[in-house]
Image 1 (cartoon, rainbow, N blue to C red):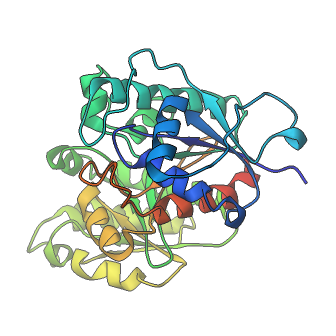
Image 2 (tube, rainbow, N blue to C red):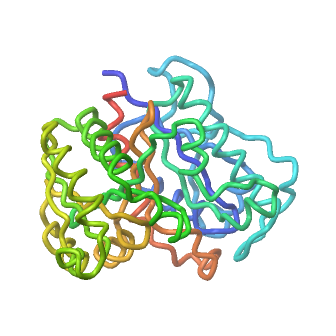
Length: 326
């Protein structure tokens, strides 16, 4: 049996990414069998292991046959600016390092060296301090793969975002029949590519009470409903729009239902309320699997040993579950 190669990026060295990665791999025996390759810096890992009191052997990654690979190894990424590990805030050197970890891992995934990529949290402010004008992992991936879709998975709730990291004003401008239909069809096809089961998509309305037949806004009647009907005609199991204040209850604890949220916070507020500790960010529309914890760098607790690794563990498990298809 050929085991998948799963890449893991350290994320921002000043956040909780290195901590939750080491805590996850401290229980390597309980994770799915795979070759795990950390894309990062021995400087960061050694400091984190010392702080956590962990004696975890992570040998250098070597380009060997899968059968001789270590279950866990380090792909050392050169980080010229990173001379010391500073925690708890945004720093230029940390931003540059976290971007280089991610960039190197994406290259490995694109070339097929790894089948899946799990990314620890980064700081958008740190990236910007380092001159990287991107709003995060998905923004970077969307430049190369414009149809990338941000989804969030947990045992309790699943959500797909029609728009990602856009100002609300810009998100609302995109709610047009053409864009919505393209999104529904693309979402449906991407899920077919990675899962054998059929999902039922529940579309959230934009306005209170989903517009109340046009009394509280016309987007539902003019744009959203026509797009849903056309998607239904093309075989997509989709319904709505449902009032935003009830649609998430319809999907809660229903594994085959996915809520389509029309903008970032509409989907992320209920998702993080339901599944903050074990939620997973899954990017669809890529030639490889990419997952990530659903939380950020948590600078307020970084370096204190308090971070919960459960979302990272779930991200690793989902990446392993889906990677054989790539």
